[in-house]
Length: 115
Image (cartoon, rainbow, N blue to C red; front, side):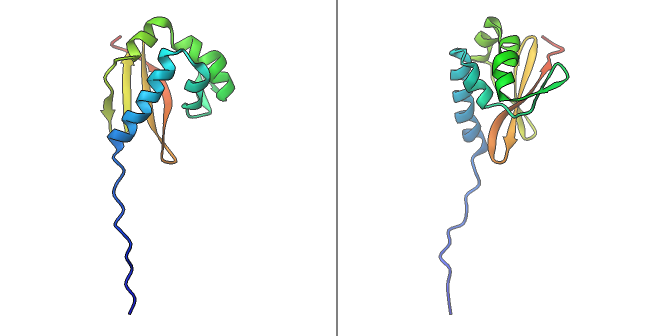
């Protein structure tokens, strides 16, 4: 008779995991590090109705969306959980984050109708 000594897998603490991702993302935002921000984006990233690769995200999407005022807001904006995603609201945009292949990514943005 054989017995397997495999420990039960613990579910990933999604909130702590997202918190670590958000800390890295915010550091990149505060430093205005477009390459690092693009590295945390899901690509292709839709911007102005066109898909953009990582280089395009760094070169054109980040400067267009992450103005000085938006970057300042993103430093402390509280993340709001929406189903399996998180959203940060910094007028005039909402920044949406989700998991892709087990990794948190900046998925998309939307105009903030309340901003």
